[in-house]
Length: 120
Image 1 (tube, rainbow, N blue to C red):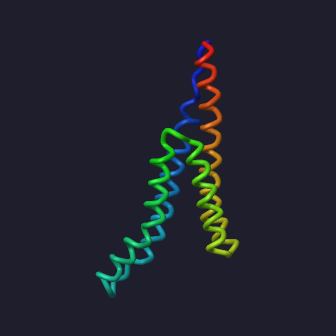
Image 2: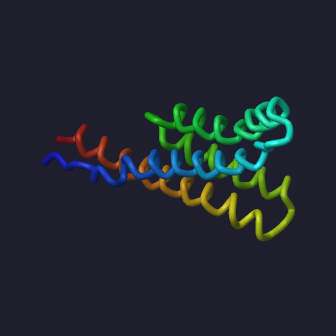
Image 3: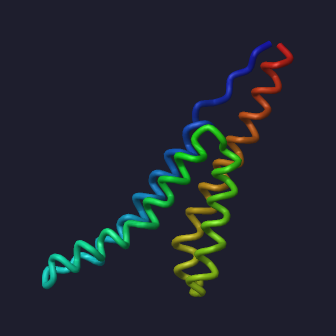
């Protein structure tokens, strides 16, 4: 008997990670300043770096969800050490931990599905 993994389990970590990258990218808009257009653009690109790092992590974890789970937990813990403010830790690290849990769940169900397919 061949079992299918629910598509929500497979796609939700990727979608949540892309949404987390977009959320982090929103903070880059703060760097845009009408007074200094060139400095604002440079600051904008620098502030987009965390979102780009999250997108690279999504690309690495696309076919290996356990890597995504480990990377997003590392991002959350790393930000908690950098920020040291509870409100910002909850706002930034909270969604990253949710994404890590989604990748871990997807990896666990994906592994279970591959074992079932090998027996069938």
